[in-house]
Image (spheres, rainbow, N blue to C red):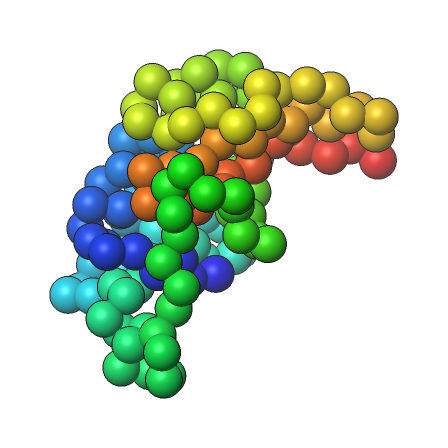
Length: 123
């Protein structure tokens, strides 16, 4: 998954601080975080502009979230949620237990990305 942002280094720093992720590498307009089997990466809007006509849509921080989210799994969802908000995320939906037993809450990062903070799903 690649999230387009205005400042890749700033996004990497924020996700390290807010969610405890580790950087894999950062080069100019692109960077990746260690997240397990799926890579979470950030690329500069300028890269999108050079890759395809019109580039990528920039999210409005106070607008409705786009149709995708980054889902991060934590054993202690309420603590991870509170840490994310204290680190600069905007709370969108407080953690709650869903009918299937998973605890889920949503925040928006300072770059406009929708983030689901969830417990592991247990079958």
